[in-house]
Length: 345
Image (cartoon, rainbow, N blue to C red; front, side, top):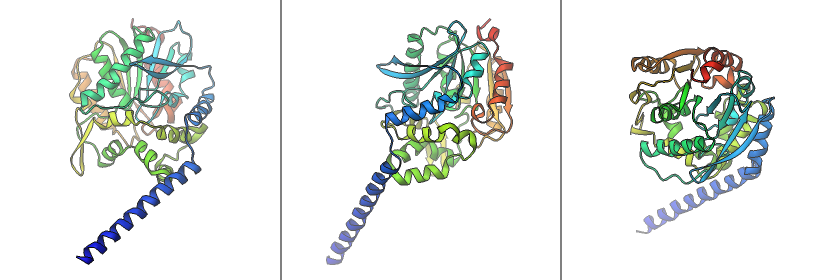
């Protein structure tokens, strides 16, 4: 019996040391890389200064919360809404605001509820429909409050998944839809992608302190488009913001059938319907998150629904062509979106 008591004390001693270690390094992380809403705002402004165009900011009320919104261009021009992907915000379109406004669009970027600098309500949903409803309800109220009756959309990654759902549920509202490297296309996910969505970077950043920051430094892309103008620092600051509603809501879109088999509960490709507006799909030839083949499969399936659909491949880009190859992205958008098209006529 005494050996059991001794073993229990050793286990408790190790556990207490581990707790002390994690708390100490977490506090050290806060000292070395402090985070706050003021710092988020300061770094966000630094990134947007590189947009080289006049921007207007507003916190738009919707669903009882505030959604951060960025405006660019002439208000009388046809509206074009930009929807970001996982872990991002409207600021990640900073290289595109001027180009899109110069094409004759009134550009409107939003931080989805629970992401970026928008407010982050507690998320209590459990199902896929709960997750989609979380975004659909807030986005629809947001566009109603802005009096956006008809508008075009460029959406990226998981934002493309959500934008398609909105267009499907609100026919006649979206006049043109561009899906840029859309995510959650097919049921099967790679193990690393499944882990990314289940154990999100935001969870690591918030809970692991200094260790979280070291992991962030190790895994964050080293390429210039992701580090220039303070974008890397902004990504870290946004990841550390409290109340993880955005990443928890997205987490419910996937599940693990076994420890090494993550799947999408409701794949994009299995929920397609014929859309009345034209759709343009963009993949990237070096995308490490969503393969070209998956995006091509989505394009083929969209065509089979009777939707008018076109397709482009961004060359020399990973998952974010609007950020990595902005000149090429401008050409792709320019060929598809012109002022006449954007009016829906």
